[in-house]
Length: 148
Image 1 (cartoon, rainbow, N blue to C red):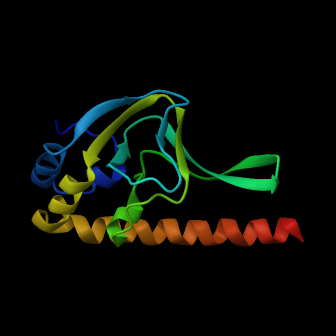
Image 2 (image 1 turned 90 degrees about the horizontal axis):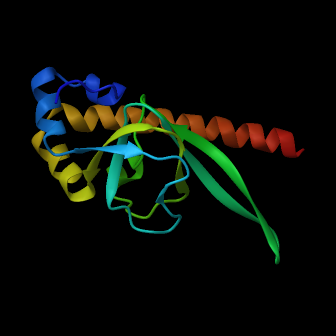
């Protein structure tokens, strides 16, 4: 069980990795599968090993049409569900599997308990969340420049 490829989980000490992974299940990422929908309550967090997950927002163009915009990609360096660290359980985007692979999946309740039980986990995931925030800010700035 300690043969993970997810970089966040790999950064935990080996014994801690095993304790964390005992709370997870290994699943297959199947392209085009929607893991979450905007505004719905997250039931799981996902830690990809291989493959990737696109973060997509839908933009209303007019009454009859909309467009989808990919605002991020979650791969093995990351996790889907980082908003759970802030106590936010509704997702701000759709998450769609973009590339086939495998992924560790953990129920939100089990993740919250792991954050309490595993001392190294909160700081690691909070640092990761800060990186995601900076990436989103850079994307927003780039989109503003393109729009003008």
